[in-house]
Image (cartoon, rainbow, N blue to C red; front, side):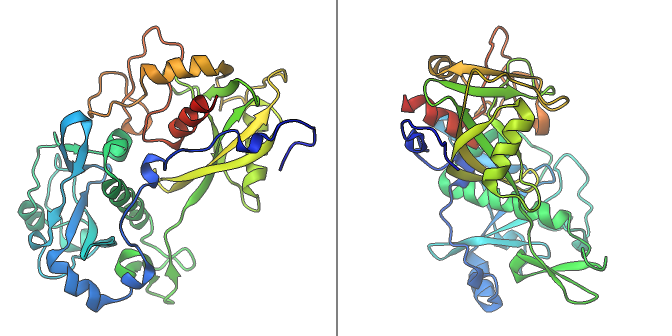
Length: 359
C-alpha cells in the first residue's frame, strides 16, 4: 500500500539496524528434533534446563555493565528421564535446552508429579528456595540477556504459557496431554492435535515523511509515558489493512506508504508484534479513541532523541525505583519529564531508535 501522490520514496526512509531484543536466538529449533525421542533421551544427561515460575521469572547471574546470564539447572537435578511437562527449546553445539515450570519460591512446594510443576524433591535438588533476589523476567531483563538467553527464555515463557491454558481440547472439551517434546498436545477423546497459538499484532511508527513522529498513550499508563500505535489483527484481515484500521481507530489519522520493519515475539501471553512504518499528514486533526487512547501528539526528531537519551521505562538492573506498570514492569519515576519512552526489551524502542537515527 503506497501513496498515490508524487514525492520521495519514503518506503526506504529507515530500517531496523539489528534484531529486536526478544527476536534474538541462536539455538536450532527444527521440528525434526522434537519428534525423535531416542535423540532426546541421548542428549538428556548433558542437557540444560531453564526454570520458569508462574510469573515468568527465572534465576539469573548479574554481571558487570548490567549484563544478565540465565542460570540453568543440570538435568541431574531432575532425574534420569525427561520430567512431565518439560518442553524442548532447541539444541546448540550438541547441547539440548529444555524448560520446566517451577513453583513460585515464595509459595509452598508440595506439588505432585501431575501438577505441571517440578516436585518438591526435584525443586530442592535444582537449588530452589525462597530467595527470589536473583530471579528476573523478560520485561525487566530481556534486553540484557545475550542472544541465546533471550531466545531460550522467550520460547520457554511462550510455550509454558500455552500449556498452562491448553489442558482441554478446543474441539470436544476432553483433556489433553503434551506430545512432540512439548510442541503439541493430543486430546484423549479423538486424538486431535493442538499446537501453540500466536496472536498477531501490528505495531506501527507513524511519521510525517520528514521530521515528526506520532506517539500516543493509554489512560492506564503513568504520566508522560508514550509509545507508537499497536493493535491486534482481526480475523480475515491483512496486516496492512490492520495498520490502516488501527491508526484510524486510535488517533483518527489516515496512513499510507505502509512498510514492514521487523517482528518480535511478545509472550504476554502469546503475541507476535509485527512492526511497520507508515506516513500520515500532521495537519489532519487527531481524534482519540474513547477508552483506549488518552492522548496523542506529534514529536520532533530532536525531542525524540532527547527523550531516548534520558532513559526508558524499565530499569535493566532489575530494580524498581518508580511506579509499577502493567505486568510488573518497572517504570522510571519520571517526575517533571513530559516524554517517557518504551524500554529496550520492546520492538517499539528499536523502531523509535531507528527512526531517530535516520534523519
